[in-house]
Image 1: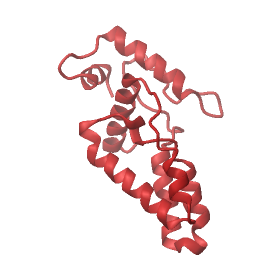
Image 2 (image 1 turned 120 degrees about the vertical axis):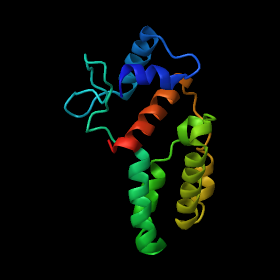
Image 3 (image 1 turned 60 degrees about the vertical axis):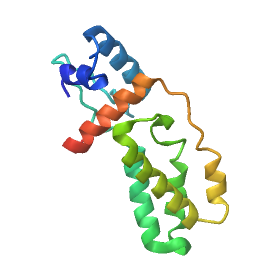
Length: 157
């Protein structure tokens, strides 16, 4: 994603300044951290294009892989995959932010998480419901991460 597109995507009515975007990208880069080789998940790119490292992974992708495999095997033999999927859930999708463009995606995520929780061992759904409390996430981090996710959805990164 180009810097110009990112500035516009953060707030179409009042696009971010170049300095604001650079500051927020730097904060996001620090939050995302590095892979096992020490390379940043959001590498610096002097050309003005932002792209996640190929080593970056998404919990939602992993959740759906584990859930699909676990649900296909059923609660008796697929329980380990279902539990592993639920272990990835650390709060409400997108930090509980109210994102109009993501409302359908958030609903889909909540339904899938609930389905997995009810299919796994008794009591799991109740235990998991306690951790669905929204975490405090800066709104710009949600905006950036959701913009990156939308971009990745389109480009397959």
